[in-house]
Length: 493
Image (cartoon, rainbow, N blue to C red):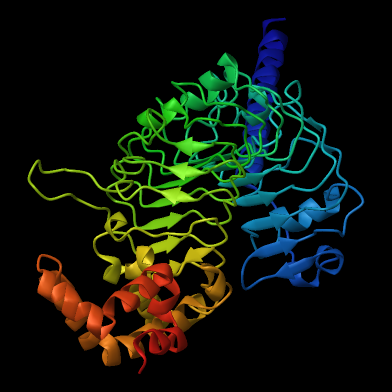
């Protein structure tokens, strides 16, 4: 009996050992057996590159106007296992209506503009961790659709990570009227934000909070949003804002928010109904601003003293196509920076004043006119009399030497006899007349000054007929100055 039990126990132990050995062998086989690697797909020979344009040299996949729906699972298989990684994918103009959660891929620039997108899945871009540029413009996105979690990054044990590489976000031309205050919490490092052509009407407190929280923001486009002003603190957060585009809005005054944009280098205010820059409605100190554009401002008629004096780094000033603009004060640009006896002026290199209603250009507006690389004065009704002496005798010749094409259509608007005559022609004729007639003018002036206090002088002057000459010149000074025929007739040469 004991012998039987012993034999049974020994058999059981042997079975256990065999099972353990067998299990260990199976485990060893499981852990050491290598996975079969996925076959690398030759992208250029795939169906995807027959459907779309594949530019391998520039790592661009262009599927614009080529899809009826999103890329298929087979297409994504080609992308994720292909021998090429496309850094840019263009899916524009495909009538896509929604954005699903996209597969993991190292795309850097994704263009979804000009579709019909009206919904985006939560976490749609969470697998695109290398994404730098995302263009969702020209779609049908609403404020209800555009929630913060749309942009959340990959999930971790604690929370969703941010899409830290996303720098450019284009939301222009959608149906947005407001922004969620936390819209950018998962994409905090945005450097360029485009909101143009969304009918906000007013940038409300929520939108202001969202934008002002973007501390890395360098470019902001809020053009054509039908807004009347910018909230005072909207630019408080993005202290490094470099470019502000606010064209096509309803500003009647310069936004007070500009005073916070102290690092701004470029400002575009085209197509706003600002009437004048005078009094308190002048630019605050923007010491780094080099480019200012204020064009097609249909109500702008005057730029007053000091209007641009706080822009002492300005190198390019564009005031074109302001049809009512007829006055630019000679002190519009100057400022006494040092406190000395001399005024300071911005180092302007390009000034565009074409297609306005300006007739006189004061010499004192800018000291170093000779530093200008471009001066566009075309299509203005210039006065071609001695009130514009500097323009006629100096500037137009300078323009003709540096950029002849900009001198061709600078024409006189007055006096009537010179209407539509080019200022360059007037200048050339005046220079010829000056060389032959200057001695006569000086002689007459000396005789008149001596003759006035003496009766004898007056009698002599009368005998010589000089009073008659004076009267004729006084009645036609402007035209005589620039017209060889009338000049000769008056002095009987």
